[in-house]
Length: 455
Image (tube, rainbow, N blue to C red; front, side, top):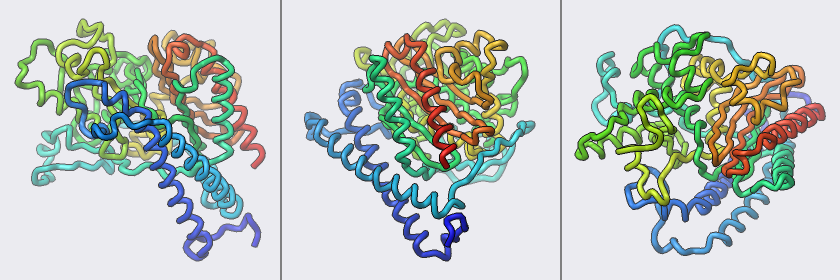
């Protein structure tokens, strides 16, 4: 039998057995990687605050509080490495003998939302269900659940891991902290991935706006928000446009208020705080119930000049708990890469909504037409070193004095590559470096191009 001949997995027992082994191995490695991330964040969670943590945050008993973290992490990493060899080998065999299992190209469908449309959203209600429009309009925002309820089944790939490892070495050579680095790389066409510390929760800065965008599109399609909330204009004057393309904190503040039916109004009655907090946490539950474990995107980005808040005040401050070790937004690079993957493959909310979100995320890499906002999200970031290539580039950045983050989808039809690269650098040195992200991006692009040419 020629390797090029398609083989039906339904009729070939060997293919079925191979697919089962791949799925089992992947589930095991996911569990181990999750445990490593939980151990890494254990101490921070224990000392973060004296107030109630957001629901579904991991809780650790006092019996485990002083356990050494080094030994379990090492054992887990060894197990991960061993499984990586197995999965990588199986994946390579599968791709060689059964190429029909791997799609060749992701097509972006140019669609535009003109009205609220139906979508496979899941509404989980504690009350009796109703099909009336009025019932839908009055549903609690906490009932809305992201429609992609399971993580995409991506196979671990040793060739991609080699690229990630090279990035880590490059970062080390630049005298930057590798412990402050998270990487997640997805080859969209082969549905494979590699990573480095991608399950470590980190303060996401404006990356949270990517998640708020998805939540807003979900509420619009569920009939909980008017269609006008997601309308796109060439002048970029709507909140959804300025949220993504200008990373405007004022737009973000308004959208988070709309998503959670809360406000940052000062001097609210203390008796209403618990109800306010529950509503604000609803944006966490929206993703948590869909498998985004322990994600926290319930806090606003500051400053917000429109409401005269340079920093959190009143309940926005109270929800952070201990000022010496505050609870803050937390997202992992893997979660960010997953969300971008779901948008790219048009499964986030609906194909129409995903297509609209892609339009908001696309960046023009031509330096001659960059606006100041473009420079803020391209210069010093992943797109800067790719301006010479004929590619489509979609991204969202996060940048403060203490970190530099970005998730990007890069597609080159001429080189037949399509991948998602997520880079989190949670350290002042990353924030101040204008060279490291362009260096990382060019290395990954060159390696992905070389890898594709060998196939």
